[in-house]
Length: 233
Image (tube, rainbow, N blue to C red; front, top):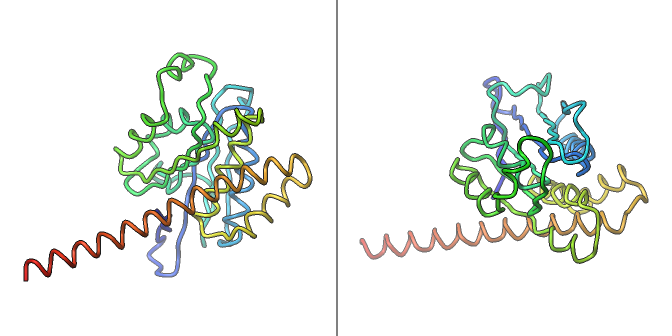
């Protein structure tokens, strides 16, 4: 599993990346947006964010966009598609499938929360495997971060799912564990540090494991192809 950077304006050394962050009010979408912007700011000179305003009440859908690159001038998505989808609640990833294309990397917490409004009934019939299958059907690479059981067991606030998703995203974006901890410390300070630190490590470890598994599968496929070539010869 890897996140690719799109070439822009025909320059071989130019690249850009766009991320959509989806969740519901009270789950830390705004904080996650800032963390992702910090992470991308360590790699790109231009970073722009755009957050949904006015509907951040609890249970209502909230979204944000982060775009970064060498010559990116706004957070607007030219083609409506993103390279990365980060969902702090699984059902919100399903509602964002129109922004997903072949190769989009989707990181979602395995958390399901009934939403408010007209979509609240639909959430009850959604499952994390169904969401993952719908994203994969569009050609996306999907990583599910296993955070829900930990939150229930430790009786921790659901908003920590955003920190877990950040940990996974930071690893996939090429940031070291030390850098990821620094981003988190800079934004949070001592506020709920122990719980956020653990949540971030859950996400970072999940992404690391997914990358190792992908590499192992790639090596196995190369070996299998080589065996087939030998048989054909």
